[in-house]
Image 1 (cartoon, rainbow, N blue to C red):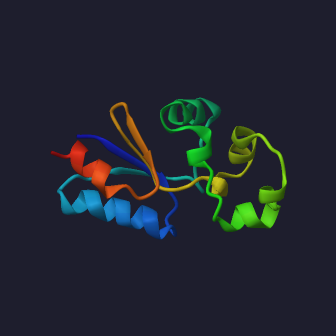
Image 2 (spheres, rainbow, N blue to C red):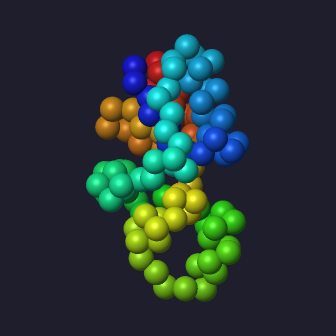
Length: 111
């Protein structure tokens, strides 16, 4: 079973996701978005599964700092310019993708 987790080392939700899989003896492949950003192709693949709106973290500091709640903008363009706008963790398994902490969904994957 190959699980890929994308997030940041400081994100508590990402840490919980990593712990979730390790507790089930699954060593996830972790990718720090601060070190390697999301590419345009990856964004398209992920957003085709969960939608652009679900990828955007409207509660993030980056979202508030840019004042995006008062602006009309292209979600893809903003996220690719600033990966801190992504709701993390992004967890991928085969063709499945989740965004945010979704243990109930992951339990179905590891059955």
